[in-house]
Image 1 (spheres, helix red, strand yellow):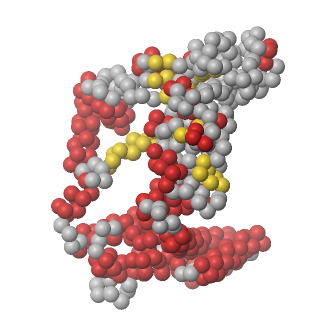
Image 2 (cartoon, rainbow, N blue to C red):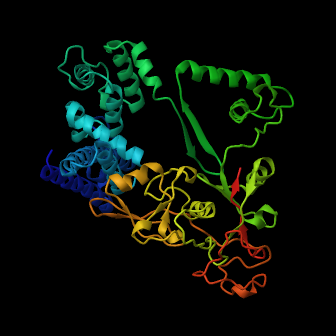
Image 3 (spheres, rainbow, N blue to C red):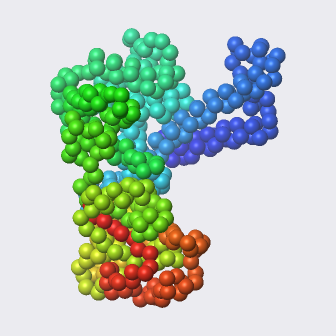
Length: 498
């Protein structure tokens, strides 16, 4: 599909969506659509049934529209990748070009780079190797979830085997076609189940060889969640995963008793955490795994740590955590403390300055507080892995001040120097945005600082600063020379190396 055809298709999809919205706003019976024949007689007799049928017809239409939008997205992503490849400088490596394309698509769609990379890969597969799937997606008879299943289940298949799997489910004229309801009418998870069974039965490569190849993809993944919780998942060989599950289950069952008030699920989670943090799975009677000893950065208001307020602490790479959790980390595992002077007007750390090229340890800590993570749009890389980088090169007159420093992760640091992406200016309180090779400007995410709470003091933003504990604040443009300044009468944050 060329660009002109894609635009025409997009306009047609927009027209369909506009028609639906107009019908809904106008209160048209059945949202402007006709129910199925089996229910038509009953619907004519019952206005509520007729309205219900209209909403269901609208949902069915939006499903088709969503599929068609997904098909347009596929064509657009594949088209941009091909065009960017043609425009790429011959001096740019393939890897650098790929990184630049992924970053641009991620920023345009406001998604993570892993999501953008997956979309580009899936788009390439659909436009070059799965014509029946892309055709069904464009027609709206197959959802994006079903199309992704087809891409997943044909991964690593030879082209002939991939076409055979696709034809089995989407070509009714093929020998021995799929029986039962069409692929697009199956729930996506059930379609995956059927496709995987067919794939295993007809795969030209033995499962031994495929397993050996898949073992290389083993990994551990971490995803923050709400309320001071997070998900930890592992992609492992089946025997190892089953062994871990069975061991934690057996240990959880062994703790059952009249004095045990935790559920089986809770005990299993506690035992797994205990094992990973160096405890003893067979001696977990208290229900509290040991505090982590890995290095983390924790920022906690001093008044909250003292019990005067209940403000949450900030765990680097996660976000707000209960102050009780912060106190436990400090009591059980903290090995180093750093005082950080903050501005009680808005909660932002105050600037520190240096005039030499090397970035000091204090400045690196400060960058971690200012940025929270790699400043590239959508990047989740935590600050412990990141690298200090001069925005305006030292060799070209740049200084080693916070407003001229960023802390990109290794991947995006490399992208800057090989992929044509440029970080913009930073300030004492804000990390730099980024400009892509196409000239588009993308803002950087950064922490939302808030004024700390003071017990017995009004909680609105502080403006009459000299009345706060008798402190005469320094000028924000003339920061203290030492991060560990002795202004102990003002609210402090405590980043901890645990």
